Amino acid sequence: MANQPTDFRQRFVAFALAQDVLRFGAFVNKGGRKTPYFFNAGLFSNGSSLGQLGRFYADALRAADVPFDMLFGPAYKGITLAAATAIALAENGHNVPFSFNRKEAKDHGEGGDIVGAPLRGNVVIIDDVITDGGAKREAIERVHAAGARPVAILIAFDRKERGLGELSAVQELHRDFGVPVISIATLDDLTRYIEGQPALAVHVPAIAAYRGLYGVQ
Image (cartoon, rainbow, N blue to C red):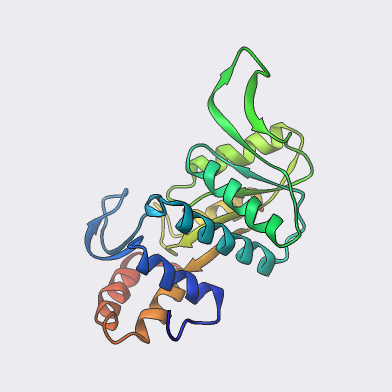
């Protein structure tokens, strides 16, 4: 792609737009809010885009400089994301174990509800986005229950949007568990990117208005 941004966050926004994962229009999100943009990581749905997505996750994790021993992907979207990130890290000489959970524990074979490496040491939880934070709280508690330590949650996109109170779900997780949330990109990165794209800059006022209603710092 010509004039590709050098910063991985800006490259990720360009990639998400090219894959139609980031869209502009009139949408209603899970909380019933009318939003001028929508991010759907489930549309990274082929081998090439998933491979590139894993490399972006790995870029964000390296940039965060968080010491970790393994990755954990909560079912269901976190499963493929943790695997893709582990592959991308291994391609760059950082071979780490990963695991994920089943929704229901098996009572035969190896049994249990964790598949892959045992949860040990410092664990990075990987998922697509944080909406209300419920699934991430369950993942944090699962890691703690195994005797391991959750050191970060890594997501693709942070909407920087309030939940039911004054804080976002990201901020609430950090407040309640002391676990930092790392994102490949945020709403700030999206705004910065489209401001420099004449064909997309028309969406900036609607995003700014939405952020004025529901945004957090």
